[in-house]
Image (cartoon, rainbow, N blue to C red):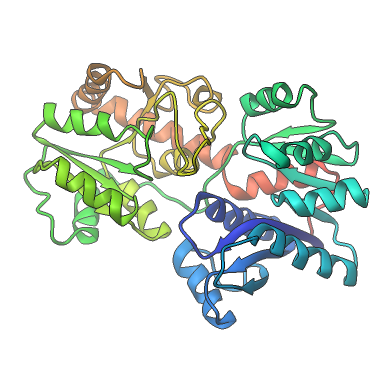
Length: 389
């Protein structure tokens, strides 16, 4: 069986985007026929509890992949500790068929100091003392640098004044098996998920899923709610402090900050909404000072939105057009132009055939190209590794 070692920067389980990406990509490799070992830090002391927690948090089956991890209460040096664990294990086990690292330090040792073949996945531009490490890794002939958008590949080359020796562009993805809901079941399913909300009186339900950080477009949703009082706007996600601040500042009956949902539950809620909103602005925070991903991002929720079969309204940003086709898989609107967003919403509410067309085509694209298994298969094919049968 094909053996894959995945070296992460992640603490598991957690709500971070990188942890979601890592877990689902490992599950994708497993579904593609590989035996996967993931190196990470545990957020729980007990190993047995961690497996069940991963299943509950990310919606993956227990035993899908092997987790080789450590626990520490201190967050200091997590990436270095994960790298040290993975390097120790690699030195004492038979070589796997593929090593994929999102961990900068492990990638540097393996690719630059040891000269091993490596897939190095990066979603950001490193700065400070980490910048020369990233440059050294991606320019090695034994490294395939995996990036999440064509724009990131371009910007990465400009940032380092040199192109990767070998680059592979694969957008993010969504888990397999997501199915749209029939229109007549949407409201009952949503009511089941939100038993304290009376959903009977609303003309339509719009959903947003994700963080409330600056640049995520929450202000656009608030403005839409003020302008369309008969439409319910549900905002899922955010940390407790941000949710409390928003609830205190914007008290409208048709705007509900519903908080965090487990991953599998969130996917079901997406399918139960009438319209999904993705109002990214031209500058997007990931909750870390100095990190703005608007130019090169590949949001996982975009693919989960497509998978849900629910029509999507998205900001018209160049990097999102690498995936979305206006009028075919989504309706696009200028990021900060509320009237444009309202116009696209009114179109969907007035033209149910358009809504169905967008949802159907979005789900087809997801099935065809944007599952984690498809992404895993593409990585294996690009590196010449045969998936096991």
